[in-house]
Length: 520
Image (cartoon, rainbow, N blue to C red; front, side, top):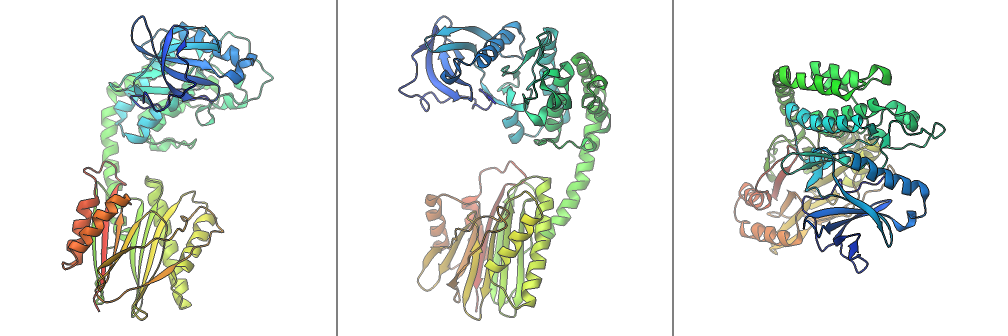
């Protein structure tokens, strides 16, 4: 589908996409740069010579210039935008032909798509519903003119820097009184946001189909994440749930028939119930958070008190690191283990996955120890088969170290997501430890390898998160050297000061430094 300008950054890059093939003018408009190449069209940033304002010029791709269906869609999009004159709908400034086909001149909107906004921001229920109301007002205007959008989704809704909403992309919008092609079963739209009747027969959509799509978007805004088609209304506050249940009825006749009724119910909820239900939700989340804190103590172990190894951990996070698992194991009298895992997803689902992963790890280690086996690569192979067979649909980035003091070695195997250093006390040299293993969960048949390195008295292993640039690694190596005479705790503190960002905005963001020294 043509995503048009839905994911453009707030301020375009004026030079990045300029090519020698860039037209100088399209119609009366001076072309500044190429904004985006879509499936069926090109979007250019242009200058209106009469007003000196920036606009967007959309042209039909040359390969579709003789495609009658594509031409009709292109012309109909311009007609529908022309019919609309509403502050929450993109404006049409002109249309016509040029030497390479057809063009539409539209308003340039400085903003981001609601999808991008949703991935980066968390909103209160009240603020989320205020955004939805702006979209609903746009739909009300469209429906009043007999227009069904048919592809309402977060990518086709822009939010400007001052919080104003703009509905865009009318490439597959339709007029309610236009002739319907009942024999067409081709899916037109985006399945995650489509009503059941639109999936069944795209030509039989109605105004209530748009309302269904808007209800899915509303659900995502309230939850603060994309739904990927999985709707669980039990997560919605009770009184608001009644509105969702009506808006998302499978039978379109039982759904809201008029967007005005949807707007009325949402407005009444905001006025009389939003604040009280949000407060109840906050109390519920505080209870859940307390439970997570207790569970996190199992997932993020404190350094053990081992006589032969000095271990220090320093971390900083805005909240509990819900997608990490850190654990230590004493495998025998002189053999110790360190296991670190990061789950790729960063939400409550990841907390469940990482908890399951902890269970897999414990069982795998118990099984291998019963066979007197402690090689990291063998453990990772077992774990990889477990997570892929269990269809967790998640990726796990791992680092597993076995400190074998009998052979004076470290056996290790890791993914590429961590920076790991070994400080040789005798030579005063620092080695980067890395193995190009893939992450767990990608393929059941992956095979993991390990390597070994000498680990003598007073040598130190340092592990850090997040992974940094080569230039930053050079700085950290200097910090390691400068602090070798100090304790592991002091050295870990200094590394953390160097790698942590100035602010940690998300729960799952973590800065971590682990320092392990062999004492004797």
